[in-house]
Length: 76
Image (cartoon, rainbow, N blue to C red; front, side, top):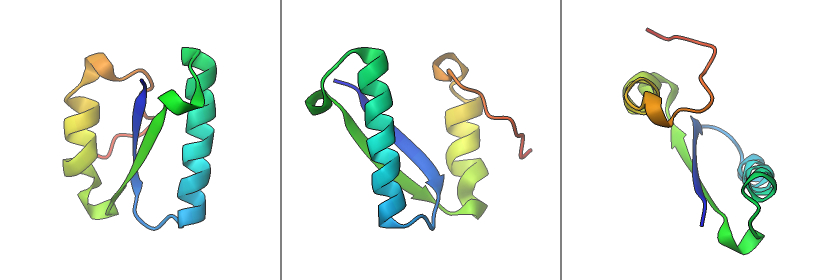
């Protein structure tokens, strides 16, 4: 039962978020070999000024063992 949480800068439209969820679902289905009914995707809006404290430090720097794709930026 894969559940994916996507955190991104606030401001994306509902259509963009729906498209992201569709594409993520397809990718998870293909790579995890599961059915669409098993996949859930949530999207969390984060204000750009909150990104470092709300996402970068706790989720990227703070959990290196769970990070399978590292970002190509360093806001620190």
